[in-house]
Each structure stands twice: as C-alpha cells, then as structure tokens.
Length: 136
Figure (tube, rainbow, N blue to C red):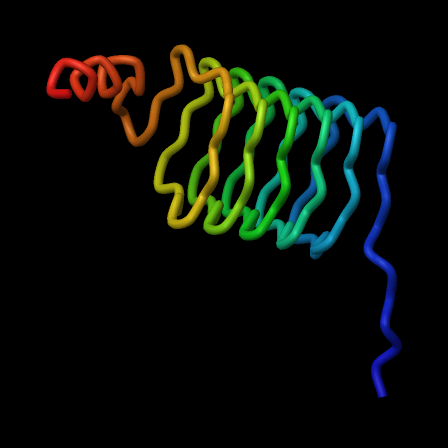
C-alpha cells in the first residue's frame, strides 16, 4: 500500500535561479515564493498553488501546469515551451513580455492580467487583440 504524502511547500522560499529537472511537484505550494530566473524542465506541477509568486524571467520546458492556480503571479519575461496550462487560473497575473510556445490553453481563465508584449507561438498578443477590437 502506497503512503499518501503531502505536497511539497515552498511558501515564501527564495529559489531564484534554481534548476528543477524531472521532478513531480504536483500540488506544490509556491505561494509568495521567489522563483525568478529559475529553470524548470520535465516537471509535474498539476494543481500547483502559485499565488503572489515571482517567476519573472524563468524558463519552463515540458511542464504540466494543468489546473494550477497562478493568481497574482509574476511571469513577466518568462519563456514557456511545451506547457499544459489547461484548466489553469491566471487572475491578476503579470504575463508582460512572456513567450509561450506550444502551450495548451484549453479552459484557461485569464482575468485582469497584464499581457503587454505577451507572445503566443510567435504571435504578439497586442496585435491580435488590436485586430479583434477593430473587427468588433
């Protein structure tokens, strides 16, 4: 019988510049953590709680963030590649200058987020929104 473990907690932690590779951190608590300029690769972060955390300039590759809560998170200038964000919530998040490539955004909720300079698969979101407004 497998023992149930509590998810890891890195609340208020200073993980600036840290590298996480091939780790299961599902359900992890990273509230108010400093993770800017960190590198996360091949990571399971399903149902991650990432409120008020700083991931500015971080690099995330092959990361499962499905059903994650990224409220008030700073992802400005972050590079996200091959990411599952399906069902995630990003309220009041800072996505300014972030670059998303091959990101699953099905069912994602983005509300009151800063998105200036956000690029999704090579498309500058500012131009996409401008075109949509002109059509409306």
